[in-house]
Length: 456
Image (tube, rainbow, N blue to C red; front, side):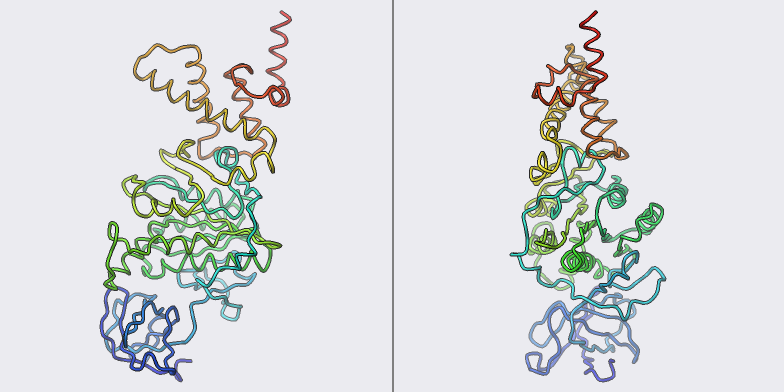
């Protein structure tokens, strides 16, 4: 293919994974160089790597080299292909694993002849988007019961390095009720990549899962394409096939760091803490792909965002919080019920779920807050009341049954367990809940015990 293409050989500079090439008459009608298009890098007459145009300035074209520039000389040649980056899209990609350039790395059959779709293109017509109204069941009680995930929601998992967020994300991928799960890993160490791969295979969900994986040893520039590959594929599954698609991304801070590295190599002026000034808009372009489409499927995004130094004011989590609809806060190996928030849960709680959902959720959190206060009093050797002792018992049961990351139950089982936990620690009157709900859902065995005590 490259035999008929014009070759440009005046390489001006090679900085990091960025090369600059001079292209005469760049503004002319004959130029094939367009921002975002692909190019082929050749060295010694042989193909070296694909690259993507990221800036046009005067007669200079800047390109990201997918394979990195190690070993690349200024004697290389650049051929512009005149087309943007594309992702393979067909039923054949289910169960497959791709790298950050969209190439299969699982040893499976070639997908060269399968249809392709342009990545990082415009979103689907906003008029086709409908209001979120359906729940995504994950069988994780801290999500389903207390911070319900809703179709078309975009929500991050705020955490820090060393926390088991990858294990948690894999568990959601396995347990969530979704037609297609698309995983995008950015800057993964090999152990994490192998963990996701083997977990999906072991649990039998590979047939509905697509993996795009950029490892730490891969070129940095490929890290920037992983979300675009995952979201372009997700959008087509949702719109064209009516699928309920769940997109899982880790780690968006690694993605932002890659943007910073590329920006520095291109001599861009850094903003807050060295990140580029367009960090917010770049993150928003990806997160806003989450949508529920009229007469079609939906795209839901759950993305890990690590906070360096556990600093929520760090530019990445800080900007993310303005874009997304809440957050799950993972620290000390548990989902924090106070730091976590799903701003769309009111769209489904009590509407798609049971009539007791809203009140039991609020009551449980109220009692857990009291248990935290009672624990602090206990630690400072204050005298504890009977109520304090009850809340301490409740808090221990709450952490064990709901906050542990290995806790797994359906929403209905979770609600029933909430009632059982309340009954083990408090009387119905102490809960201050609606009498109609208490009569309907208070555990039958506790009711029988209370009736026997009254008769005696």
